[in-house]
Image (cartoon, rainbow over all chains, first blue to last red; front, side, top):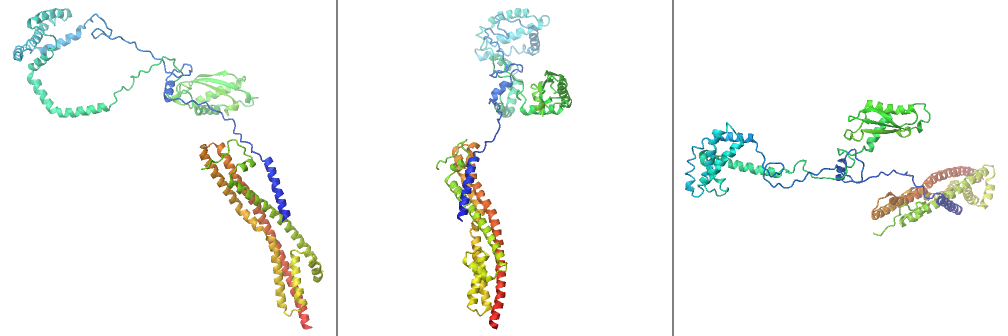
Length: 353
Length: 238
């Protein structure tokens, strides 16, 4: 037993000793130098600005949208009028619209001259305002007959001014005209007086019947209006930039082809490519072909060799590969047409397969 | 919770370093398993040597026994030296024969029974010597993996606790703790595999030697039985 035990101890000691010496730390796994991809985190706002840029602009550090022009700031208008530009001189009135108005007013005003005596006594009992209404109907009545006689033959504004002057002459006769304020109220009264039965009879009736429904509709409309977004859908923005436009496209799909999309294109081209057999040193050759594609993804023009390999058959094989793939149709993301309108492909036998 | 030492990333991961970095329980398990392995190999070496000796002794004895030498002479030569295996069975039987026969035993049947008993006893003693400590090999073979696994579980538990404390799941931080825990299972398997193989081999050897000795005992019993018949019957007749 002693022999066995001592042998065993010696054996274990030897194995452990050899193990400790030879079985050091195992060689660390060669994970390979992983290619680090530069990734920059940008906000959605930055992205939006980036893709709003100009396609042909140079790449700049700071993304900026297209420069916009500021609208001219107009000074506040000093003169009353409908003119676009503020002018101190009065605008020349356009004759035609006024004619129509007056012509339309004639039939309405025709019955008025007869009731004119009626309104006159009515305002009289109302004490003070009596002189004011009087002139207005008077003017109306007096103006109206004049168009009857004169408007049809000559509707020029000169005549109007000529006519106005007699009116102005008449005005002081009728009343001292205490300013313009009371004016609006009497005409309303005069009108109601002119057609008291029609409007007053209709209005209350309508109001009473429609009041309830109106109220409901109004409240509903109000609610709908409250819920509606009153902001304009577009065109209301005022974001401006005076910076130079940065590189970008119109669409927000990203400015470049993704790695997967590029791989897909590369594998498609490598499938179409048949390397000339029997050529010596094909592995070392390398040709760069550039070609442009139209918006439908078809070849636009002939592919150009931008960097020749020195071997014409090899170069032509690359050109043929592009043409062959074009016949089959390139698989490209249609929404990124901006990015693949011009493609440069390096044909390298060691990389393409 | 006590702060647990966690191997720093990039720490030495050699076997020796792993052993020293391990926790107390894992260390004890590893030391125990190592001791078991040492003892297992001691037994294996011892048994292999003793079985070879036994086989050589059996062969030598059989050669002498079947050489035509008289049993009396053989007994005289063997009685003086230390015997093993068949020799001791032969000596035990012959001693009983001599004691009983020379004193003039009356019953041949009782004499036969006594001789068989003596031979059985000698055989059992021999087998005991041969089979001794083989049980340890069986135990190590079955229990060592579990003991190693226990060490691993404890070690991984400890390292996970340490990871929770470190608040980092970097593989470089996690790996050394798990590697040192797995070392316990490795040592357990290292002890168990030779033990199992050796146990199977040695027990087969023991049973072979046992059947060989039993066969000799039966044969010798038959020879003695014939002798008893001849001698007792002649003595009775005389």
